[in-house]
Length: 134
Image 1 (cartoon, rainbow, N blue to C red):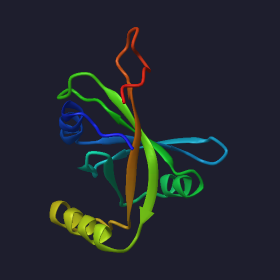
Image 2 (image 1 turned 90 degrees about the horizontal axis):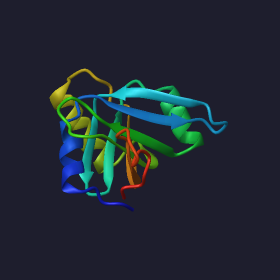
Image 3 (image 1 turned 180 degrees about the vertical axis):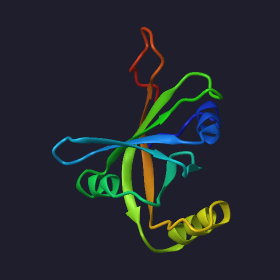
Image 4 (image 1 turned 135 degrees about the vertical axis):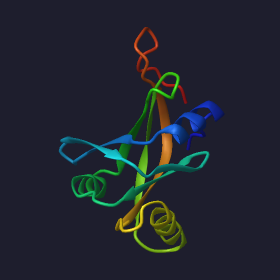
């Protein structure tokens, strides 16, 4: 379990679209743009599955994933890695559905991906590229 710094939390909150990467059991990669990627605690991110097919299949085979944080409104960039749990019922699932329906009525919000943050890495080019930050 890794807690993001206040600066990292702020950067993640400014992301409009977050690239989320997964891999199948055999290592085949997949990256998708996600509009609902929200930090809900210091070490937990909620990712909403509206139309995930390959991503969801990958997570069922291999629960590891990464979120890339970068954009014009953010200074620097970093990669958050973690493990996923797929949730399709319960309070967290219902809270997520309500959040999605308030922002974008009509989206299916089929499942909630609960990402527990395990590592954070530097993504800026230069000598520190790829170094573990947390």
